[in-house]
Length: 333
Image (spheres, rainbow, N blue to C red):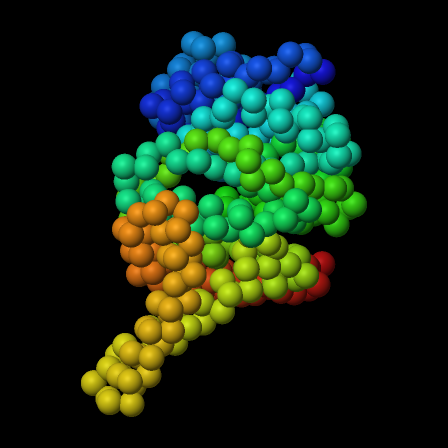
């Protein structure tokens, strides 16, 4: 059996070597492993570094991770497609564990979790602890598979058409939703981890959260049954952005005592929502520094809120454009 590992990469010359090297060290003995790196329009030596180690490299103009993953699995030889991000390093049993679970349980796709490759960064550690708690709450019957650590049978990708290329965020969730709608069985293995290099820039992290929140609205439009959560995104997550928007709306009125009291109450509620996450992280790590998760996650909520506002604006503009195009078609001779 041929297993193909597909790795989308954009300007990852510094990390792609570690990722490809770890893929070459897999202890898979029941067939061949093919490594396919899709260079998504990099301006550095990502492709050269990958090819130097023996990976098959596909070059394309920058089109985003969805298009890169699609180009990768379509060019791959394997009937099993493992998806890995270019800043992640798998353990030696990564492929074997995925394939064993697929075969033993009759699954069509399976996802794994993450360890942290840069724990010296407090910001990176906070992002990691948030994911650890979310993955701890996911069941083995999955509605969501992380694009940076998952595995699909080729037939699933062929039947669904793969990732939606217009999505540059949350494309992994959208694919999983469609796969389940078509009757494919998806599983989750929290113990099959890859070491991820998390973002260390607060601005970069908040921009990513902004982008994901805006795109998620588009996904919920197409999959309304998932609006109440998918095991990874929880109902409480969907309550936070409206609270954040209300908080922002009251800031200009802070000089008015009733608004100031309301603002203080909303801030207290917003912070208290994240007490369970902070307590979970402190208990897991035995490090008190993770109480910083409360203000950190509270700040992230505002990126979610603004991202959702932008997502609504984009959807309305797209709907208006579609209506205008239809009107033009109706009056054209």
